[in-house]
Image 1 (cartoon, helix red, strand yellow):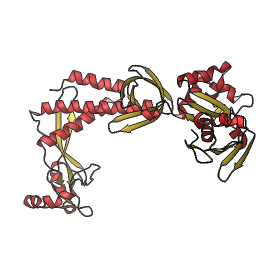
Image 2 (cartoon, one colour; image 1 turned 60 degrees about the horizontal axis):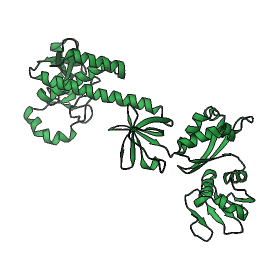
Image 3 (cartoon, one colour; image 1 turned 135 degrees about the horizontal axis):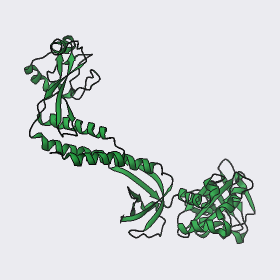
Length: 408
């Protein structure tokens, strides 16, 4: 039997904590009980409804028949129905709507349907039961209660509650974390599998994939982790939260927490080029002439940028001012190297940069990193020339000298 006190308590808890209305739960329980009853005792084509009384624990079952006119249906004998059952099976599942209710009777051409005595009642017969009734309306007939149905009813109610609880939890988590997509979230390391880190967020579990981690970082179970929530994905198995610590937006969100000028939009981070855990270049612009965009990110005595670098495991961050003048922008992007001259090709979006021999290694950077990040930041292919062999870099990760050798 269904424990009414427990059921009432569960339904009230779902309503208060999960926001699932009690009447909706009772409706779902009733529908499930009707489905279970039909499966155990019903016949093909029947419409069965159930009303569950939460006060007494009793369930009343009723069969619904749709009133039809004789000339709107195709009558066939029981033997003929059995004979045609195989040929008509392919049509099953096509419902004919009458009176706003879905039926599961085979639909024929136009408005004609096969008459099923378990589903239909002819208008002339219906008028003998209820005066004034019209085609398309419904007649309700009570069904006898089955003594052995109590066990099925209890199990059905339990399954519905579990299902609704999962649905409510799914909607709640989606609503909570859907609003946080694009923000920094915090959780604790739950477990590690094949390089992926699973983060306990409290009400949900997030994944920090191997490719989204900062190279060289190690994690311990229970350790607190901050990361960028870049995707909230709804799947049949639940809500998946995907995190990143290598995403350029993670760096931007960290600066929003440290620099109010970035948070309120006065200072905008126009471009970010990042090689996570190693080095990043950031181009910033201020909408207020009285506010220094670079100084806003650096902070007094470099405290702001130092805090962000610390969160990123000591990742070096170059901050430059964005400029609409592409030559100036490219020159600043190659800092700390000093540039002698820049020639640009707008068609190919290629810049030829001339530096003195003593500045070439600085412009290229260790393993070609400086010129590679400058190319990513500006979106230009950059050739570095001096009295030595020229070096070419574009937005890709590969760096090559003019003679085709690897510059790393």
